[in-house]
Length: 450
Ligand code: GLU
Image 1 (cartoon, helix red, strand yellow):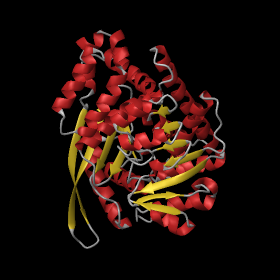
Image 2 (tube, rainbow, N blue to C red):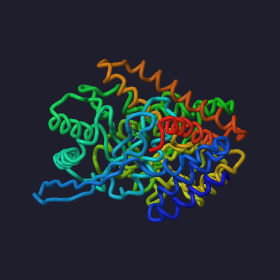
Image 3 (tube, rainbow, N blue to C red):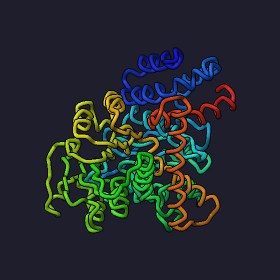
Image 4 (cartoon, rainbow, N blue to C red):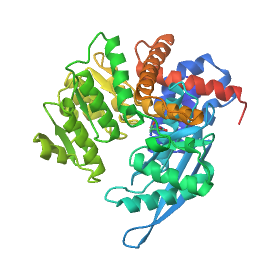
């Protein structure tokens, strides 16, 4: 590995030993870009990598709200404006009890390269809170979102920083946050958020975009391998918005999604979750119920439910982890390889531990695709939503969908070409890191030292 890259990784490990997820993602991304740094010795003098691992700005704030019993509650809010070299900061907001500085920084760092890959002018950011939306009433969610934005509104804007949804934050939460922003600022500046409702500037296909984009990317991979998607079985984890988009598109393409998972365990539906609209639509109901249980699916449709387990032991053609970080560890990776799975397509951000990822990439018969490319369709369509907002017009679903598809094809091609250029073969993981990195690196070099 390039000595400068190695040194920055080691320093990051030392300096941020208490931020394991952040260190993990820095190591994953930077170990891929070593050949680019070899070709650019000027990066070391400009300490480009040392600057890249330090967020341009990151802050926490107090979020106070009153629950339905009249009790005052206090949470921590975060916004990490990681890198603005190629566009306004852009990235989701996550509400989940395990949100902390390390998670915000890993997501913001990852977002920087993902957004670069979309080809659109968006910098990288992430935000969130340790607030747990599970079991909260609608009024509590509204009060929390209003309080969150009262603290954050001065630091975001259509040309500054454009938040969106992530885990625990969907259309409803974005609505409350945008309402509070509009109320405080006294402007109709709807380009400040993406993932909005259709009545106030949202984009068609945004709810479907991450799942659809992942399936479009998968089609490119299968095409490269000379295979068709029809009849392929897919195991996914999660049962949220992303999993829903995957199932919807799988139904259209004739692929069979056989598993979903939640914090309570996983379901195995032999006929496929993607076999009927009723089943796919039920996923939305499960999510909206706030129960956060996947067993409800098995109870309703009479299929297998395995408590407290992940679906990685099931024999399928394709695995698509779509839940959360570090969902697949080395033991699971070994089972996946032993089961003869041919495609390991990451969807959630950093769903694989670094050792599991390295193990899977060593397997000659498995194609591995990285989440920063596979899930980029979500933020990609957010970019299209920003364009529509600034032009004050609305594109049809067909127009957005066609652009999304093209974007995923470009991302796959740019990644495959970048890996090829550095003699790495069909290495989509390294290729995505290299392609995403190069643009940000060049922009930073051209903008001077800061
Ligand atoms: N949270 C999503 C992501 O990880 C969407 C971000 C956005 O649309 O800004 O990319």
